[in-house]
Image 1 (cartoon, rainbow, N blue to C red):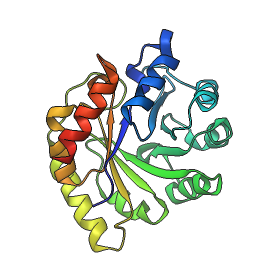
Image 2 (tube, helix red, strand yellow; image 1 turned 30 degrees about the vertical axis):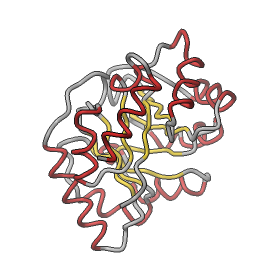
Image 3 (cartoon, rainbow, N blue to C red; image 1 turned 180 degrees about the vertical axis):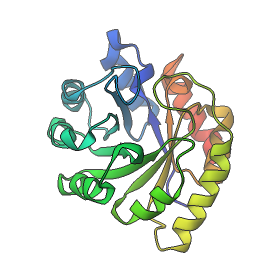
Length: 220
């Protein structure tokens, strides 16, 4: 089993005190910071861009995980890598040449990830695993924070983890994003997820305590 990593999603942070929230994530023992990049086209909202990533890079040593929910990710890879992204993930639904996109992310010195929406077939992840460091299975439909966890994630995650382990991709992590809280973190881990993205489950309330509670719950 890959190491369990906790990734607070800054989509749910208080942007008026972003640095304070980042410091709380550090004190709580977060492993990575998840940055939701939305362009207003692939999903309705518009959120963070390279300037926010540059700012985060200046104030924290934590890896920055940039989840590109955009229609044309290939046009933005260089910008986010230059801004300081450590990980970049792209949606299979919008990549015409997925292998090329994932390989380019790795060439830029970042970890590469495939993202699948809840109803996107796992075949995309299986075909792209060779160029992936992690695979993000969405457990909500992307676009808005605070949504409820979709239970069908658990079966999808089990099937993907089993396939990865059986095909020499044990090193490829499965990331889960959407509705993750302390009370369902263990279920996600048991299904095969090892990177837990959580927005409101961590960022609302006492961030340090929420991270510690989620790690304890996930570790069982």
